[in-house]
Length: 355
View 1: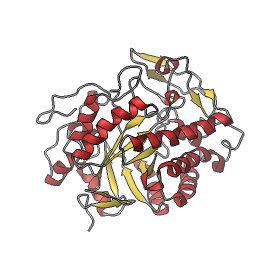
View 2 (view 1 turned 90 degrees about the horizontal axis):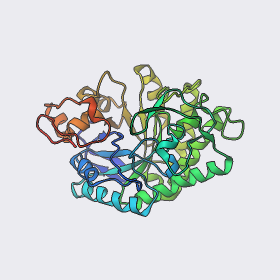
View 3 (view 1 turned 180 degrees about the horizontal axis):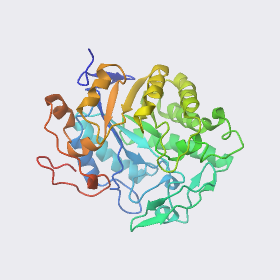
């Protein structure tokens, strides 16, 4: 029987175990340059015993930023700073992928600065508010991307992937989940286009497929992953055809031969679709399962029964930087604190300085 503590081959890269660290926004890239600070290197190095670390989302271009103090992967200065992070992880034997996250309409001119305005597939404002550093502010309607700008955005993902490899990352994960730009194109609620990127499913998946192909062509499919969150309503996403949409997307990207598909489940009712995507995808399958509260040790059974090749842990990895060892020993576990999810130097756990 396969267990979470067995090694696994990820498109030619040997992972020490099947426990992944899920991407989590930390907001520790200070200053206008949006570079990760030395604290970021320490934070990820502490968690190098994960089979695979997937970083917080890094914007591929300046206009892709969604929140204050998030890091980029579009400048020489950022590449150099990320090299400190990847070196620290590799020195401890870890494997680390950078998540490329274009926030699209989930942003604000106050966050972007420089006279930039959020963009999206259509000029449809999301409901709700955004934390902009000093408090909550209402979202604004994004500017609809032109066809030329869509091509430029795709190229921006590819360039950022190349930058990630230059910075020492083992690969990249394209963020196609949680209501950010890629999912905004997928969802009919945020995509009202009438050109080749809008309308029927085969058009709405086009942007995601183009990004996947461009990144894979730039750095190799073996270094490329994609994260999706079917039926996730986060960030005011409205999907009317989830059961058709995601099988079509997987069918379109599977021939590219990317390293992995990372599915995050918003609710247990989506499990049947998760299993269908697992069956349809040829590469490694990572699951961030739907749970009540933080994902716990019981999720390891999903590897044993073949539901997933790796299970991704989020909050529990914040509280327990040595999580694989604790899972193998059956605990004990520090309890995640909701105040640790965004930024800061969060210490104070019972027995480990969890940055």
